[in-house]
Image 1 (cartoon, rainbow, N blue to C red):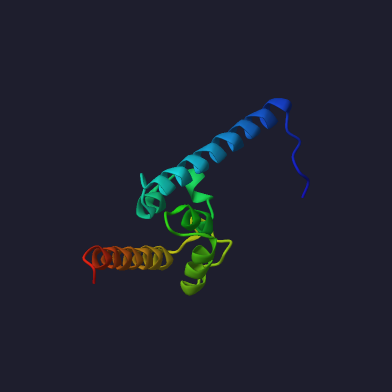
Image 2: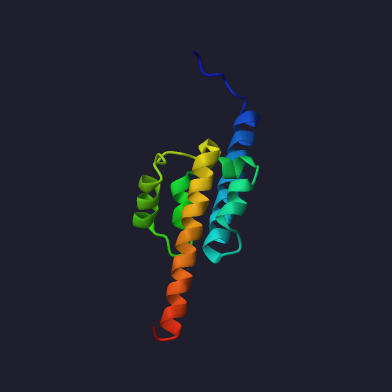
Length: 118
């Protein structure tokens, strides 16, 4: 199949769109890092920028989850490392949210025990 020839204007529009989407993805990941967005909010977003972010990138953007933890979560939930948000099935989305919810509850109960000296 032959690649279509684009005019200079079409190429410029494509480049502008790509830059805009990259900036949107970066802003979403930054908001996740800062706690201004939750994973559930990001997963439920219906826009092109979010749909093309890899799940592993989203996990790595969450507070207290690094590259190793993100990889471990993906393996445990049997989600392909190349999977994008749009490509998650309903069961995978639910499993991911449940896993992180359980993890959050465990870490908050640990903090309470430490705070009270137990």
